Image: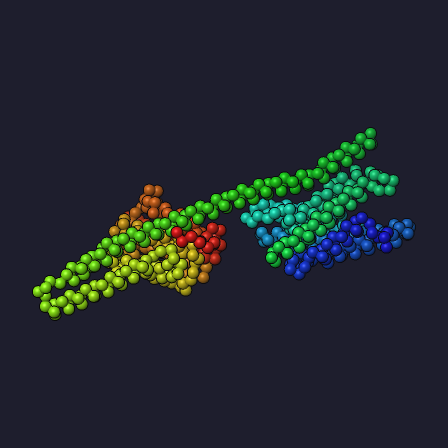
Length: 225
Length: 272
């Protein structure tokens, strides 16, 4: 059991538990949708780890668990885009932007599946999705700056959720840009630098999200009073 | 050599990775600065609004006091003086003559009591809150019509509803200002007042048939008309003043009652 509990999975599980504890019906559908999304992420990570162990025992066929992450990509695009639709929708009509982004993602996804099949990871879709999320984050920041109402950013659930995504996607894109230069660098005998980078990005993302769920709980309890 | 390359790449990558936190720190800083400025500006506007509201109340009180003073001087004092003289009954008057004089005096005293009762209903801030804009304007129009100085035609369109205490107070002050202008400067014989209540719109139109003026000229209209425009803006309303020499003057105030105007929503405690 413990062989499945990697640092990544632990962080994701902590985030899921925080979401389960902090998010209630009154938080709204957009926030509640984070619970099934995080559950899907955790299940995918467990499945990915399990497949990796299985496939490593069969070096002849050189199989990878990328297809599972291709499935996860669909949920990532859906859940995160819809959450952005809700967040940006607090300021402007976000539907045209989000639905166009989703359409582009769908096209790229189908193209990549057609191009290299289901068993190779859809890198292009992932990179374009990251660019989209960075754009949404910056657009959200712009609207937040323009808005008349003042919120204390330190305790703003929306702000920390977007910040987590921005850090993660920005890091992912930089990591992809330098991948071929960074990937050969070994930190210890078995672990590559890129592994550390991706673990750090995951920790930043899920820490920000966990904190944003806690902020949401605070918001709900203060608004009830 | 390879080690140097790797170090350079790691350094560059680290610097680029640091861009995001740097951006975030700068953004939060900018956000806090802008919001601080925004809050200060809002507080300034709020205080400006409260000052203007207070000024409006003081002006209304002044106008009410002038009106009361005029009524007492021109009407009540005159009638009571007449009653006093009338009741100084000479000894030679017959019983019949005395009864007539007493009866006349009783009628005059009754008239004075009525006038004083009307005067007590004079137009003050409390009356606008109690009676509402429509009834207050109706009373004022009735008073002016009774005096015969000018003829006021009042028309109410749609279902009259409360527009909010502060808005109604400012609207009534605008009406008073327009009325004053018409009485003092226009030489108008007739004043048409329309209050139109639509679902999402309220119009107050005040039109006189006086001498008019060139509305486009900056010095025309004086501070009274400037006050009307400024006060309308204060409650989120638009004021359009249309006039031409010989064609009278039309002042139209348009307001969307559903618009939540930042400084016109709170309840005003001070009664001045």
